[in-house]
Image (tube, rainbow, N blue to C red):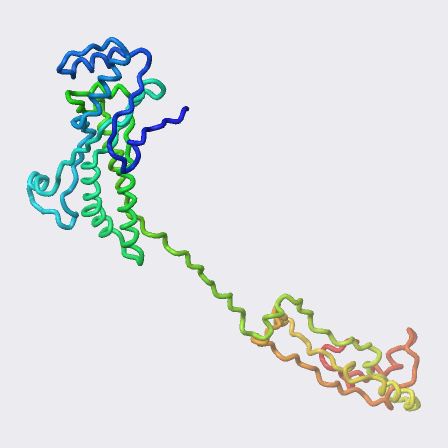
Length: 348
C-alpha cells in the first residue's frame, strides 16, 4: 500500500492554505454533476483542467466549511448539573450541542481516491475548553488521590491539545457529493457517526498508577523447641539387650563336694556383674513399651527395671563334676531343688 502524503496545511497548528487537489485523466461523471449543481454562474467543465480550477476555487474559499458531526456535551461538571424531575428541563439547562466543523485540505482521486478534512480553529478551541473545564474535573473527581494526580491531569490536557490539532478525518472521495454552494457541505451515508466516534476517542480517561507490588516476607516455619528435634532424621536404634547368661553358670549344683573351691573362685571372679543382671520379666497380659521414633526428651519413658542379683549358692557348694549326658538327677542334687528355687523367668 503506498504511503499517503498530506500537504503541509494538514499538520498540527498549520494555518489554512489552498486545497491540494489531484484529479485523474478522466473525470468521473458524478463530480461533474456536483460542480454544475453548486455553481451559480454557469462555467465550462469540458476538461480536467477546468474541473481542477473550479474545484480548487470552491473548496479554498473562506466559506467552504463542512459540518462533520454534532455532539451533545454537558455544560458543567457532573457535580454542578441541575437536578429536576422533568428530563426535558435537565436537558435544556445541562447540555449543549457542539458542531464539529472542518475544511478540506486534500483531495486525491488517483491513488487513494480520498478526501481529507482538518478541524477548524473554532472547533478545536471549543473542544479544548470543554476538556479543561468539564472533562478534566469529572475524571479527577472520579479517581482516588495520589501524589502525582494533578500532574497527570495536566499532562492529559496537553496531550488532548496536540491530538485535537493533529486530527485529520479521511474518507472516500465520494463524500464530495455532499458539497453545497460556496463550498460548504455535510457528510452523508453515516459518515458523521464515524467522526463522532473518532472525536470522542480523543477524551482519554485518567488512569491511576498501578498498585505497588509489595514482597510478602513469610516467616520461617517454627521448629519444635525440643532439644532433640534437630535429630529427627537419625534412625533410632533399639535398646541393647543384656548379654544372655549361659544356663550352666547360674544353675545350682550339689553342695556335697568342697574340693573345687580354687577353680570355682576363679570362675566367679571372672564373671562380671552385668552378666548376672537379668531383665525384668514381662507379664503376658501387658504390651511392652516401644521406643518412639523420636528421641526427644519431652516424651516420658518408663525407667527400665533391673532385676536384682539372684541369691546363688556359694562356690564352695558347687560339686566338681563334668557336665555331660551321663549326669542324672542324683548327681546335681535334683532331689533338693526346692531348696534352691530360682527367680521367676530364669532360663534353665
